Image 1 (cartoon, rainbow, N blue to C red):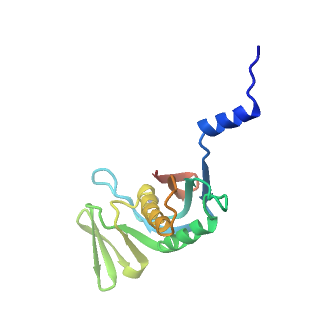
Image 2 (cartoon, helix red, strand yellow):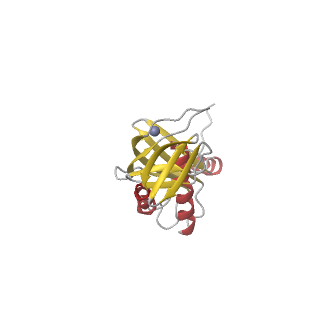
Image 3 (cartoon, rainbow, N blue to C red):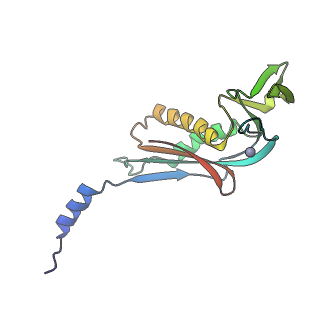
Length: 180
Ligand SMILES: [Zn+2]
């Protein structure tokens, strides 16, 4: 004999065994930036200076707001991300914690040595010095992610269960930083 749950039993089962999960994502066209960088690689290798048209996306997960029935307002995420993206747009990204590089700001210029050999001199205003070991898409995602996390906490979004930042270096080629 076939056993069927009543509607009441089904609702109870669904609510008690499956926690609802909601997430929102923002990855707008204008959340992109063009920047130059180079990566030091294993051993004594270092890329040549080159550029990317990066795109940044953010995803947050959490419970629905009891009044608005959303995880959060999309505009909050956009307003947090826009200045972060703008801060690195049309700049040379330089990592200050890379032991293979020496960065010396001097008279409005940044002198960059690679493995002790002078290689580049950039106008200081064209550079962003980032406290990173390397300007990989992964660490750029973390760089943005930690700032987004702080901004969300400051704005009272303390109950979010997951935050993901995507940095797309070129079409179809992304790195993700995730906090739970
Ligand atoms: Zn690159």
